[in-house]
Figure (tube, rainbow, N blue to C red):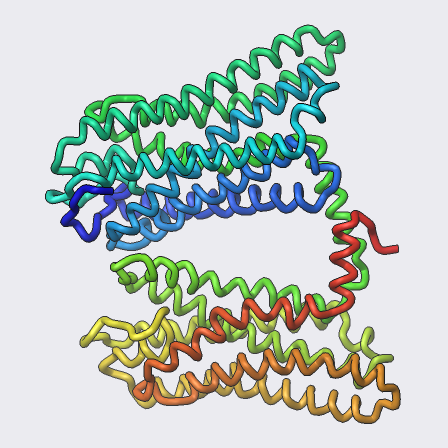
Length: 563
C-alpha cells in the first residue's frame, strides 16, 4: 500500500444506535455465531474421523467449512463487542487486517463453491470416471489453487482500498471494514481503485458462478434422463438446496459489490449480515447435515462415544466438567489478542464487570472441582467401596454444588467490587479485569470489603486446597504400603495431577493472598499461568497421559467400539 494515511483509527458506526435493538441483536448474533462454529467445526471433525466420509466431496466440504469459520470469525467477534460497548473504534492496522482476511476467505469460498459444483458434475454425469478425474492430487491442487487465487485477490483488494490518503472523517458507516464505506473516507481520487476492485470482483464472482451454473445445468440434464423417479427426486432435492445457498451467497455479493459506490444505501448492512453472518450458519445444514452419509456418521459416532464404557467413571465425569470449565480461557484470550494488534485497549465498565464475573466464577468452580477430584483417594485407598461411595448421584451433586457455590461467590464479589467508587485513574495495569488491579483503582476500599475478600479467599481456595493435600497425603500413605512395584508406579501418576494443582493454586495464592495495594507488574506473569497455560496443560496432564484415553482414541479413530 503505497498511499499515505494520517488516520490512526476508525470508528465503526455499527448496525443501530438503539440500546434495546442492540441487546436483541447481540443475543441473536451470538447464538448464530455459536451455531456457525459448532456446525462447521463439527463437519470438519466428522469428515476427518469417519472413514466413510473420506471422499472428494467431503474433502472440499471440510475446506469450505474452514473458510466459513474463519471469515465469520473475522467479522462476528468485533461486531458482538461493538453491540455491547459505546467505544466502537478500530485501529488502522486492525481495519486493514480485518478487511484483508475477510476478502481472502470470502474469495476462497467462491472458488471452493465452483470446485464443489464441478465435483458434483463429475460424480453425477460421469460416475465411472469420478475416482480417476477427482483424484487425491487433483483435489489437493484445486483447493491450493483456490487459496492462492483468493490470496492474490485479497492483496489487490486491500492495496486498492487502503492505498489512498485518509485525511478527513474517520467514521465508517458499517459494522466492519468493508470496501465501499472505507473508500468513502479516502481523500485522494479512488476511480482507478474502484475500477480495479470492480473488475476483480467481476472475475471472481461471475467466473465462479458461471462454472457453478454450467455444472448444475449439466447435472439437471443428467437427472432428467434418469428413469427412476426416486433418484430424480433425491437429486433434485439435493441440488435445489445447494443452489439455494449459492444463490443467497452470490445474490448478496452481486448486490453489494457490482454496483456503483454512489448507489449504496442502508440496505447494504442487511445484505452484509446475510453473507457474513447468516450464510455461514446455514451452510453446514444445507451441504452436509441433510445428507444421509453425515446423519449415518453422526449416529455411528454417537454409538462409539456411548460405547466407550471404560471412560464412564466418576474420574472422567469430573475431568469432563473440568475440561468444559477450562474453556474459561475464552474470557481472556480474544481480548488479549485484540489488544495485541490494536492501539485501542479500552473496555467498557459493563464489559469489565462481565469479564470479572466470568473469571471469578470459573476460577472458584475450578477450585471446587479439583477438590471433588479427590475421588482418587477413594479409588486408591478404598477400591472395593469406590463404586458404592462415588455413586452417580453423589458425583452429580458435587459438580452441581461446585457450580452453584462458585457462581454465588462470584455474584457477591462482583457486585461489591463494582459498587466501589472509582474516582481516580481508569488504567488497569493488567491484561484483564482482575480483582487486585481493579480494586487498586477504587478510592473507598473499606475494611469490611477486605474482610469479605479474605473470607471468599479462604472459602474458595484455602479449604479446597487443604482437602486436596489431605487426599493426596492419604493416597501417598496407601501407595507406600503397596507391595507391587507396578501398582506403585501406576498410583504415582497422581504426581502429574498434583503438579498441575500446585501450579494452579500457588499462582492464585501468590496473587490473591496479598492486599490489592501491593499489586505489582510481575503478577501479570503469574496470571498468565492460571488463565492461559494451565487450561492448555490440563488435557495432557489429566487425560491424554492415561492409557484408557489413548485406547479410547484409538478405537474412535479405527471406527471400533468397546466390547
